[in-house]
Structure formats: structure tokens, C-alpha cells
View 1 (cartoon, rainbow, N blue to C red):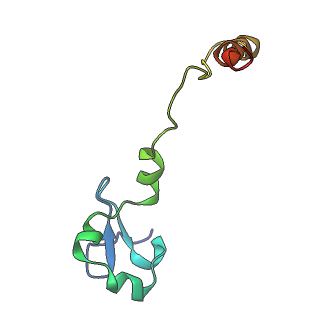
View 2: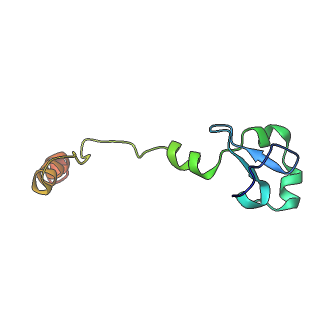
Length: 86
């Protein structure tokens, strides 16, 4: 079983889930890691948290409704853009 990393001078702690990772394992070179400010290091977000907290696309009137048939969704879409052909 791999040993759990401890927070030290060569690791980054996710500001959301508090998981700790070695700088190289999350994609930083030694040089870029050394150039990072303490403030930047304290705002680090791991890949898992970036994925789960990424912004969803803005919804609009033509948004597909879950649980409806494809035909209903197409009809709804056609209604929402019908003004363009008028």
C-alpha cells in the first residue's frame, strides 16, 4: 500500500478536498513549482475537484429536458428558433 503523502515543501494541498499531491505528479516542473507564490500554492485545486466544480454550460430555452422523447425535444427546439424564419 502506498504511503500517504504529508504536507511539506514539495507537495500541494487541494484547497477544496485537502488531498495532498507531489508537485510533479500534478503536472508542475520543479522550476515552475519553485516560482509559484505561497498564495498560488494555497489556491491549488486538484484535477478531481476541477472536474466536479467546473461550470456547466448556461441553460437556455432550447435546453433538452430529461425524460422526454427525442421528438418532443426536437419540436421544442424548432419552436424556440421559429422566429428566425419569420
